[in-house]
Amino acid sequence: MDQMWANRAASAETAITRRHLRRLWGLPGTQLGVVAWPATGRHRRFGTWHYWWQAHLLDNLVDAQLRDPKPERLTAIARQIRGHRIRNIGRWTNDYYDDMAWLALALERSGRLVGVGRDKALDTLADQFLSSWVPEDGGGIPWRKQDQFFNAPANGPAGIFLARYGDRLRRAQQMADWIDETLIDPDTKLVFDGIKGGSLVRAQYTYCQGVVLGLETELARRTTDERHHQRVHRLVAAVAEHMAPDGVIRGAGGGDGGLFNGILARYLALVATDLPSAGTEDDDARRTARSLVTSSARAAWDNRQTVDGTPLFGAFWDRAAELPTATAGDAQFVDGAVNSSEIPERDLSVQLSGWMLMEAAHTVAGDESGPVPAGERD
Image (tube, rainbow, N blue to C red; front, side, top):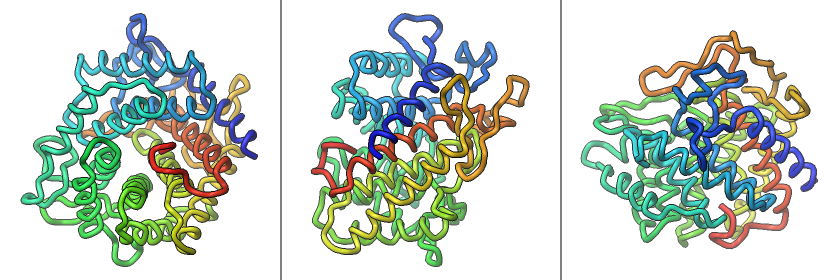
């Protein structure tokens, strides 16, 4: 089973490599993911590039290197990091705290787990999150600079990063407590999107659940506070009940939404492998998380299309993928978010989620015995 998922993850990686990876502007030592396939000239010139999609591409490359270490992939990781900074006009930061948190997570894992690090970048990004904490305004950290929308997709990944990097565990705990006190639906126990002007933004997205699971699992590993275990138990059960019909994680289309289900799969896998086991409730949560990842991966694989021998995943893992065309409408950036292409499968985000899911399935298949010690996987 472990080898089957390794093979499927490798096929997903090959698909991304062939269809999406290119040098940035022809510059040596660079790489980014073209945001659509089939691509237009504008896509291939990286007129559009989507900062946070590229961060998840980097995170997936780290997953692949852990699965099957290769010198050439280390080179690809270094090229991806260099390409990201150059395309971002020589900076690591932008105006969106959620974007920066995704990059911080990927860079931290790259440095710690595979030895391709950027310590100055991590310090720069950490300062962004620490200085933007504004409980006096109702947060949390905001979604973007000069904004009063405080949401789970910024605080969750920033909290995971701060739990892992340096001596910042206390702030990570404060972020987790803020989410738990402010954004939990009393009926379903799922995580709401955020709060703005004192009013809840009541949308419930799969990736909001994922980042909170990731944060609470990290804190369960690094503290002796039982409340973090309890929150993981509660949220895993809520996801299984409300966000995974027939055991398959719900899709959210293309554009930015193409990454939502993959992010939830990543952090369910973290629960399955790394939640410390102190009793039956921990074991049950880990077992449920593993089952959701595996069931979703089976469905996504069974419903894939095949292009030149490699998989093309659907935006919705419980239904057949649709082959995209170059004439279908492009994804559009509107008010801080990327809307879906006319055929969602065209978007890099959707294919990254499929690859992320295959890596997650490989991880949980290879870890049936129990959680690993802190710092060895995540």
